[in-house]
Length: 419
Image 1 (cartoon, one colour):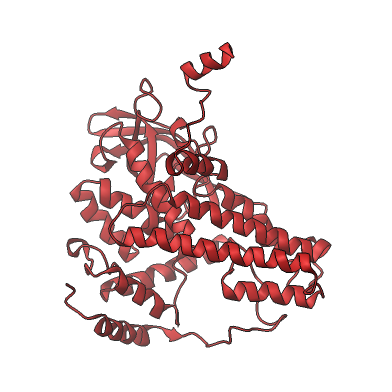
Image 2: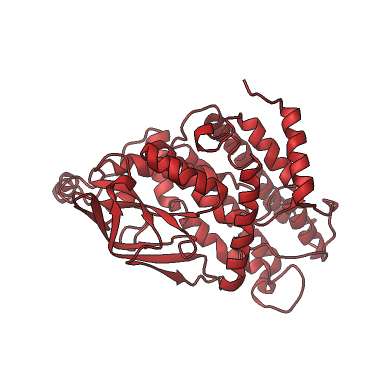
């Protein structure tokens, strides 16, 4: 049982927030067309100088929150946590949303994906060293899985780690790594035994992103920004103490991260502001352009609304499973698939209403800005596993359908030749 009641906890949180942050300006949910910002981008486009300033502010707030006892509300006391139920964490998030605080998105991957994996698979010493620093915001984590020659086929990766005494020497390349340029540590999966079947010869590590031999290069997106990176590793040394799990058991480590990743991405099922306020925005769009009475437009608008509502309830069911202490399973792939499908449906709907206005910057409010969403959706179809890979996971591991024969299987290849 918690030592503090939920109401007393909320009072403590409010006292902390009142003393350290300003309340947000209360605005009516029913904003008018043409008022406020028309930004609907999926990825924030900022220059590196501003990004670093925002990161410093985010770290400062995270440290202040942690030192006040609100940094890891559900975490173990030995690592600075409060060991309180999820309801307390949700209460804090709800209350903090009423205040103006620095953007905490810098910590999303580290705390949503990397930290749970460290907690499950790292040694007690590494857990005790890294987890408090991550939750305090002293260090930022990134995820190093995808490769140019493997894409979302994680088992096909070729980055290698070779043992050298009490260290491992890493060589290879990763791609589509969000936040690699400002991260302090990274979770990486490497091939440690090329003679084993591809799923079985992998090992996970925590690598110092500032170590000699690590180079992060930005990748320019068609939105104009550079949120992702390609990362090169040249003779990078990692102590064996920073290995995750057993040697050649990295597939299990990777699955822990991937399921948490899809839970985190899927939790943003309202992506692009497509909650009730987002649907209001779309309704205002069709009203403004005089197509609100078109039955086809009305049906497509409701399809968008229904898609996001169904995804919200599906995701809630999966998140409740996690909150009850169960590990995230393959069904988390459904929530991520639903998100990209709904975002694509939204972008197509808006493009159909706006026509050429979406690709011509005339300065008209609520037109060209939608191009950022349209150009950002393909990136979301890759993040957290491509749609094609996730459909295979749902088909095979959720629906129980037979596995497709792989061209890398010698037996499957011989069977194909026979046919």
